[in-house]
Length: 193
Image (cartoon, rainbow, N blue to C red; front, side, top):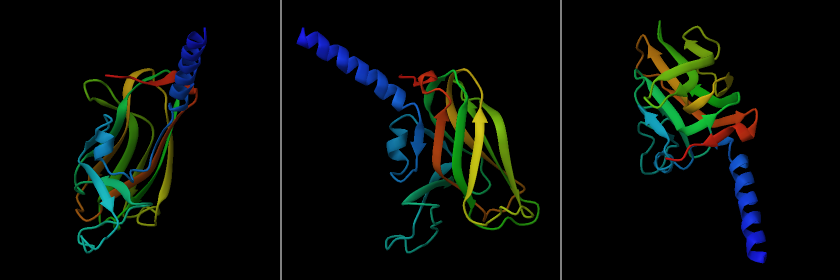
């Protein structure tokens, strides 16, 4: 009898642990490899690390906060990051901090979009996007908060995409403090492979 009660109690705890873990919060301070091992994907993205004695500050772009931020690998590239697959049937609030490394020049722009990747890795943008340009007041003014909503149902990776237009190879976008919060935590579950 005690064994059955223990198994039921453990099952209930695991159920609530799964619900509690439905929110995704990532500050990237562990680097990218541990996240890749948990099925995150990074396309043309790398880490921005604080200057250290080993890199002497060479090519180092300081992170927004903590040890690391994630950034475009090359300023002119399409950068994408995405979570593992989730089964989603509730609106998601997506928030993060972003910053540009240098003031954009001339007609250069950067566009940040949130969206979903399907199982064929097709990206669909949802809701709000941000465009940075040389005349934009958010340009190179420190970290800025991004908040947006994704309304979709199905099995998807939740992602952020950075498009670089019109050159300017010296201005790289950084992202940090990513949070994905479901309106109903019971309606966002990790899809196991």
